Length: 520
Image (cartoon, rainbow, N blue to C red; front, side):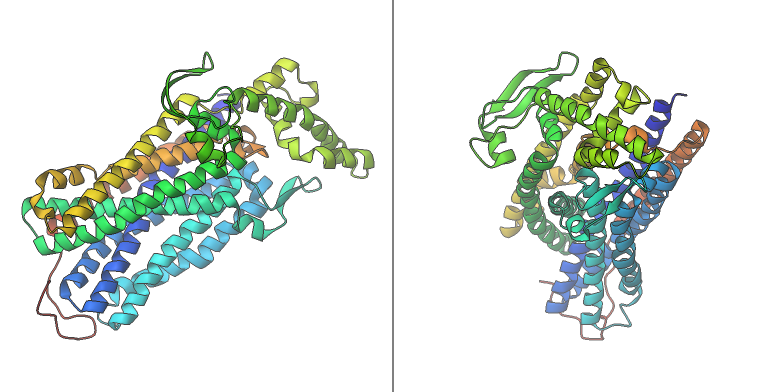
């Protein structure tokens, strides 16, 4: 198999493991906060039903948390196994947030989740509540540091290239942490996780109400889910606007591909609701557009243009040509580290070195590249338009559906009519898988949308992969698919089992206080 085939297999393996892992992450984020809210109400009111809610949804959270840990650990090992040059080239920077995530967030979760499950009879109510909130905070901190690492791949701030070590090296941890892409990515992703948890709780509550089981339990769970979910769903849309703005600042090609916008539109650019992207003809047909909308979202102005794909390819071509002298100077410095002239050329053009590396797909020495090869490399900076265009629109459509779902649920629970609206309960139940669809599509847009880069503008994906036998990748890919599929089946089985059993009632509160006589 060719080198490109090996890279494609390595990408496929990482994509599958990431998508599997991301089945568990959003629910963990959402349920952790919902469980903490429910226990807070229990501590404030002393009503037993809120304790039962905390314990029941906490069991489902624990199942999902365990599966998330099992699938997440293997992902990090792939950096050394399938992406060895990536690890060498950017490990000094990329490894920092991952290490902090393990020390600060994962250990926090792992320490306190045991106390959450086994500390009910050993801790006071308030002590147990603190434990529950620490588990929730740990889950969110874990997402924060992972997304800081991922955001650096999208916008490599706070680092510089060292010609002596042939690596990217950390210059400012502050710039890495406060990367604007990381900030918008974190709040948007976490809010999407909250939506997932809220839909999950709402759907199971709807199931109980449709079957006439655990009525009081389900009504209160639906109330929390609808209220929290409405706030989260609105946040996803608002914070999605912020993500669009940061994309325009740092990943202009991604925003152009999301819009299927081949040519720069007069400012303010319209937003395309519907269209038929044609990558072969490099055009988007049958467009239905909202005037000015994209310009306002992406630039927050009326006079700033949003560049189209053709213009961005022209810029990429210029940067490739500007990066060729940097690559040549780097080869000179590797042979003679004292070459002052080569050092000066590299310093002047180092920002474009990554673009010159795109030519390595077609020629060993970029300085020998033909104009046709430069043009092909420039067009390589355009990811697949059609899949990204439609993935984004389905994701956005689902986002507005969730707002409508939670708004309707909030109205019904406020009017105390939720159990009587079987149509709403049926819709809520069948909506259960939709947050995962939206989350996976969002992850696809974010990750596939930055191709051909492993690190945006710095390291092409095809250069980042390990040089290992194809059979090894095929074997590990097969093992991962089987292993993760088994875990997914176990997860569904356990969740169905405990949902079928329903919440357990009875028993004294944690600190021996009397049980409240009323469930209202």
